[in-house]
Amino acid sequence: MKYSSLVEIYDRLNETSKRLEKIEIISEFLRKVKKDELKGVVYLLEGRIFPEGDKRKIGFSNRLMIKALNVASGDGADKIENLFRKKGDLGLVAEEVFKKRKQATLSARELDSGKVLENIRKLAGLEGKGTVDRKIRLITELLANANGKEAKYVVKTVLENLRIGVSSGIIKEGIAKGFEASVDEVEKAADLSGDYGDVAELASAKKLSSVGMKVGKPVKCMLALLAESIDECFESLGEKIQLENKIDGFRLQCHFDGDKIKLFTRRMEDVSEQFPDIVEFLKRHVKGDNYILDAEAVGYDNKSGKYLPFQTVSQRIKRKYNIKEMAGKFPVELDLFDVLYYNGKNLMDAELSERRKILEGIVKEKKKEIVLTKKLVTDDKKKADEWFKKILKLGFEGVMAKNLESKYRPGRYVGGWMKLKSTLEPLDLIIVKAEFGEGKRAGWLTSYTVACKSGDRLLDVGKVSTGVKEKTEGLTYKEMTRVLKPLIEKQKGKEAEIKPKVIIEVGYEEIQKSPTYSSGWALRFPKVLQLRADKPLSEISDLKLIKKIYNYQRGKNKQ
Ligand code: AMP
Image (cartoon, rainbow, N blue to C red; front, side, top):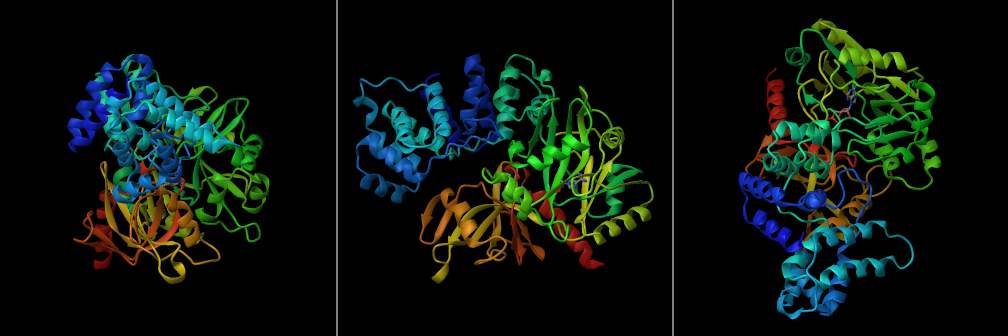
């Protein structure tokens, strides 16, 4: 497909903020795309080039893009830098620089969307000597054939900053409408496959229901709603419920296909290589020809044996070198709580009580290696309450309450599971702006504006600057700056707009109504608790949750 056809769609999507119109534009467009191009086109519409969870990274910085624009346009680095300062967006700079191109390039071939994908994908595979030059060549090759608009979107795609207001929800509905499927069917397929490119192909071939579970292919995790009390757990989940200790680690989906064990995070990233210790535990303590298990991995202190917060082991998730050494320094235990597939059988539609029974039959527990979550099945509120308190005393952050008949529903808050904590639930918020400090903190980003979600939008809930340390242990300004600086999109004085990618867990003393922030809410004494690199954007806290905690806290204050 000509890239210019896609550019036309980008422009149209950009021009409207109405969700229904966007869905209409996408559905109409997808219907016209050739079958063999559909997958790639869906990725490009989402502003990505690989499916979600794919480990490959484009790795192209603003610096490098300035160089590439300089080489491709011959306009000189100074001019490009100046324009960047003025416009604050390299996509717009590219548009300006290549605007005059339209008529001038008789010799140029028309840019093809397949070629755009191919070249950007190649960027991710490059390593070693001469990488920078090769990267620049791949991009200049695209820009050489681009007019202003095309250059703008190529640059935005490479920098992963497309921003045309197309969320996964809109893509999902666009696919449903375009191929006459129900939104529910598309959603189910997407939860299993995690790849909208695949889902669109299947929808167009009327084969959505054929998406099955396959060992080795991650599915989305089932999620839990917040409960305010044991009473609410019973009200929502049934007369008799299952309680489990809530582990404060990170989610791991464990796949065994009879030959290899693979581990996936909640973002469907393959971290098998990072956790050879867990692979070994599974081999030793779980029997079966093949399986998919759901679990939480949690770090503990080598000396005291005490469980550690997520932050401490999170370094292992991204680690590429010295993996063995890291495993020794930061040991983890695997706490299993569900089974989705066993010996060739899909168990997602089996009830929780049956799944748990199977799980108990296949695991040989060994402390500090593999254990099952503790459980209490009861219809007695008093007993449940006592158990909850006992679990808190043991140092866990709370309990999970589960409907005994619930099926495993990937990727959804369907109400089969609830979480109950003793303290006000910290929020998982996304950083949208950051500020450089003053004096000796001048080189660091030290204050962060955070946002929650509401549908497809991100809404501010305030600024947070405590919780991060100058030096020593824990999360430091240096680390925050390292993570945030490459994501700066625009900077004015000390304030920088940040590409919304970094999620932090924020604690606070109270939620208040506030006209200052776009969400209508603000946090009193907010504090950064930790980075949540394992959580996807789709799991950040939403307005409904904030309102629920606000009401809960009001109820508590009255007591
Ligand atoms: P939160 O991350 O606070 O939203 O809490 C929900 C998460 O707790 C789940 O998504 C799991 O990753 C994790 N979790 C911890 N213990 C359990 C458990 N026993 N059953 C299910 N999920 C658990």
